[in-house]
Image 1 (cartoon, one colour):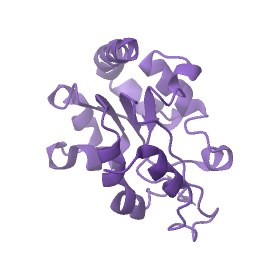
Image 2 (cartoon, one colour):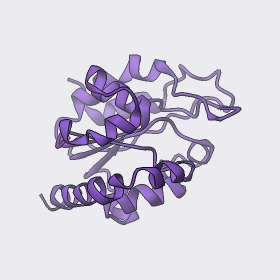
Image 3 (spheres, rainbow, N blue to C red):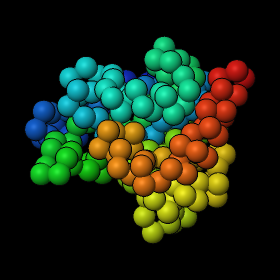
Amino acid sequence: MEDFELLKQDIRKCQLCKDLPLGANPVIRGQSSARILVAGQAPGVRVHNSGIPFNDPSGVRLRDWMGIDESTFYDESIIAIVPMGFCYPGTGKSGDFPPRKECSQTWHKKVFEALTNIQLILAIGQYSQNYHLASSQKKNLTETVKNWREYYPRVLPLPHPSPRNNRWLKLNPFFEQEVVPELKATVRRLIAE
């Protein structure tokens, strides 16, 4: 098993995706002591430019769902942030392209073997759920999230917190009524440990 600090250094130097529109700028956060894993999709333009994941309206909503402030969210000793693609994949007609597969194929097994203290994985969006839930996920994201109790407490499937998902949240009130309170309680407990 590799040391997570050394692994992060290697990932941040990675150039597998140097052909992307904005080039390679891998984004990953955390320490081996982290108990919560935020498993997102891929950085957007703002994150690519700043190197800070979820420093946008999606991050504001995610922190609200978790019931924590910004300083707690970015405390790498508690929370690791590992997207499915470490670099901004570019934008198409209907939003950002999917995360590049090179990241998960090259790095993710090593990353998750090195993060030995993770007790809760927040699988955000379809690509993350494909990886972390594999064949146990349902026919679509909505059904997977509706059946969250099947994966919990190890993995909690979430929709992406993007403002683009406002309609999904309105159509699926169960999420904020059932899932968010449980998420807040679990995060509170894990932070207190």
